[in-house]
Image 1 (cartoon, rainbow, N blue to C red):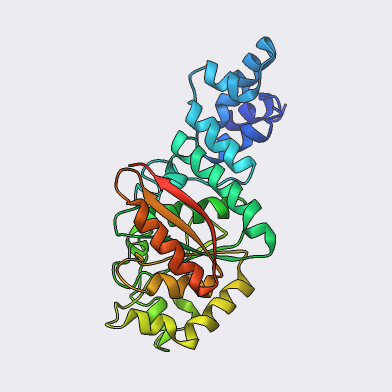
Image 2: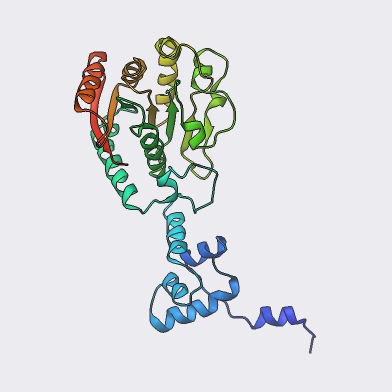
Length: 292
């Protein structure tokens, strides 16, 4: 009889196992080892349960591991704690099943029905004052639209106190202001790792004249370009009471979402901003109250 090595004997004697989609994903993610599959399948057969539940029963994986595998299976990208170098404020990326994100998911659905499904592609995110959560809401909604498979561009048009570059840990100094003055091209738009359908354009070099830049025809041309290349364009605008930047931004988007903060924003401020935006011809799509 022909001699075989110990490794070959092991390979010959081991039966073929049929691992389902979740099992393959758990293997790819390194959550289980190939040698674990036989014992998992045995428990699965004995108890007539799903592969993931069998792996759970054996203590080989956690509920978080199953959620991650399901997210991959249904093409719903999100990040594990410590994955990526983004701000923890991006709850849509790090805590996709939290109550906080469920509320944002409801808002996303309303915006799809009321605005984006009506052949509109761009929306300005506007508040009255600083510190009311515009950048937070803009960033998380951008992630969530991209999770739907919508080609999404988030633009930081707050050239007075920009935040998106830090939130997404973007490298490079060029952004919107540099595109408007011709110092940079479309390479300033950055694709976001782990989120295939999400791109972000930071505010760029802080200019002395942001309102004048936003009034230039180059900004209008860039917005037309963005709408031609992306399904969803969200624009993080400067606070409306500090300058007229938000009005110009809303006019170039065609619509605006008003954002306020519970026990912080005065009703008179929201009314004033709504009236200012209405003058530009842009539509006020809705209003959101942040609680934090």
